[in-house]
Length: 170
Image (cartoon, rainbow, N blue to C red):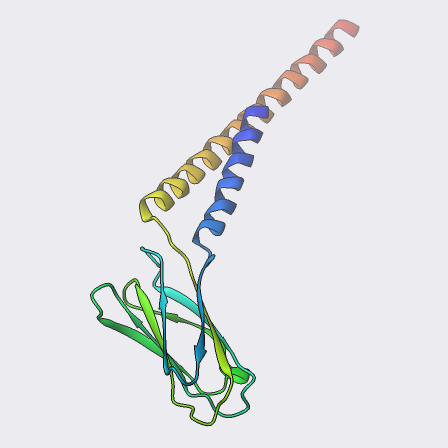
């Protein structure tokens, strides 16, 4: 019974680790100087297709910021357009391939401030993720079966003890 409990707890920890492992814990960030016109953000190798972005600025004008995503070969993957960072400065985008870098551009000429840009993403080794997921599933099954067998054996032993105690009294 203790073995089953330990194995089940290990499988729960593996499940929680899977959630952490696939979460967007990597960050590419930079500050776009309005007068420079473009900012390049580099991503780690194997960046996820789903990217989260956050734009902030003190400028009260409509910014018209574009974040354009590209793969290793420079192929365009997609973009997001943010007109007003106070209203739609946060969100996510799902690309058709893993991005390698992003170019941030703005067409706001009346702005005098800088624009802070953050892109969050995850880096996942699919082989490792599959191994962790399968291990977690197998351990949870083994743990549950071990718990059921352990509890059943315990109950059978208790019943036999009680029957022996009753038969010894008579």
